[in-house]
Image (tube, rainbow, N blue to C red; front, side, top):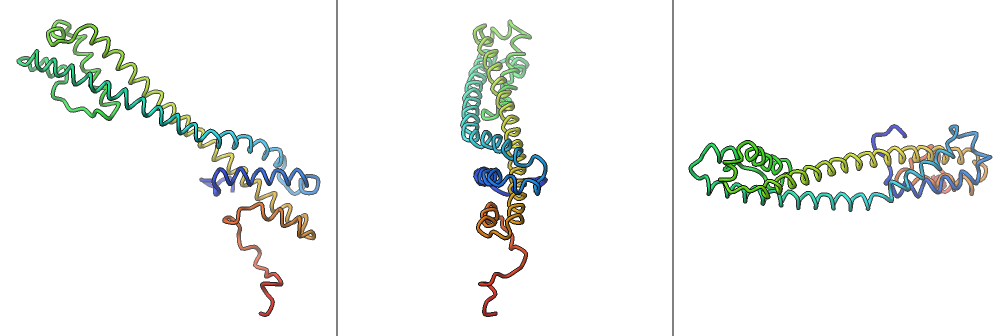
Length: 233
């Protein structure tokens, strides 16, 4: 079970089931521990701690990701506005200078909604302005505009880096949660079976162990019919 690609139960179900299994395992530890993998009960307790942390962190992580995306979109929009304004200035003031307009990216398409595209357009203007300051000044690009360019490039690049780090962090958190879930699920399965065997002559206790497994995951059993199921047949 622990090697499955994805957990079989949802995080909340796994956590609740794991807590119940850990509680009953501690209650009957002396009786069932010999039937379990070494260190399973204590390991389950540790994994429940991991699962609590990663499960409770999901809503805040989603909110943080949404906030980062919004900030990145706003930065991209600001960068796009500056590109359009400066290109318009160059086009109007250097209308007869085709090489200059080409150097500043006038007429080139860029996607205002894509960070890399906006960054590329900003850097094209910045590089052209730094390469030929005289032509840049004639095109209406002032030193304060260059400062804006630098700030927008730095800000947008930083937002993109943070977004990528956030994606990696989110993926790592998901992987950690999935691993913990699979270990908890495996432990619950072991505890359920161990209790069912150990207390096979005590139906009340054995039933508590069997009921640890969520209904959606329970198998059909060993094929034996109960008295009620078999009567009259």
